Length: 233
Image (cartoon, rainbow, N blue to C red; front, side, top):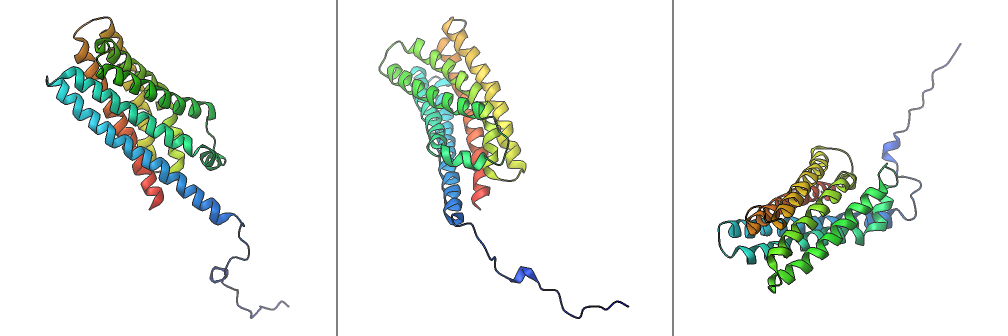
């Protein structure tokens, strides 16, 4: 005949962990620092994107359109370099973050690298345009460069959503921003080519392209910043 044990089961939740990874604290701090750096880059991208949108609207309204287009080109270049540079500076830590997930490394590297390169080229072009070096050519060329940067950089946005942890609506927003960047990149490239071919008003076409790029970067940066702020909360 069987017997029933009178001993109570222990509540293991009330006991402390008996083992912890020796580098756990350092790894958590590294992970947090990575999120903070990338979130800061995304915030700067939002601010400069909004500033570029405001400047292009002023130019479209007719106030010194060439100067406004040059300033907007400079701001957008800073936005691309800042965001891409923030990610590049924490690249090794990000790779550790991605180890447990499936991601396209070549796509991520290509997208971020293209953004940084496009931003640097755009800044140089903007400075030349502000100096009066054939701005009617330089600014449309910059819109084509930014269009290519967004076209390739947008493909990397869904990979960046992994930084925020579990999937939620903010992760979906980051992924959607990648599609918007691709579409805007195509549109900006087409408008830049039309401006170079003198099909319509050159400066106005370039300003519209820059306005679209500024809006896309603002949305993408805002989505990523919101995603990472949730991670830090």
